[in-house]
Length: 232
Image (cartoon, rainbow, N blue to C red; front, side):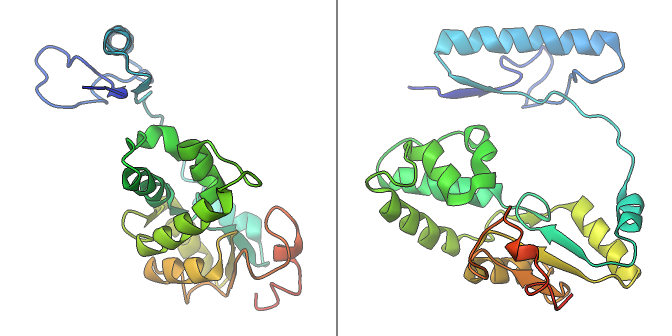
């Protein structure tokens, strides 16, 4: 048996009979709880060394944050807002990672831990293929893998992807003030449109600009130019 990763806390603390990664938080105001988090994390790391696991997933805790929705909406003023899609409005990382792992499984290879793939979600197919196959644009075989990735991703576009609650609150604030907003994404429109529609972002958005809508992708200013945002 090959163990590739462990999830904190492992072994479970005494008296705990199920996974409880948040039972002790590093961010707690209670010193004893922080010490327990440290102690049991060390045990997890020791266990990882013994079983030769290369990755350890841990929750470092949480902090209370002020709701900045009203402040952000006020910053827009009377102008229109342009918002990114992936990683800003929606969390598409689970389906992007799932697509990469499905491709690995097709090749009888072990899937990678989600924690290992998620940091590459912002780079889309390029990031996922780089993490899963160690291949980059311009290398032999990359184009074929990219086409396979995009074709399969289209079949599971909404399997686990969800809209961020905080983003929905911000959009609601814009709607309530009668301020138009649009979406700019590097996703091709044939992927972006069904995703945005299923998550209730279309037809609310005044415009949707995809990666194949302009000669350039973000962060080039072309997708945000007057020509392409005239609907706003």
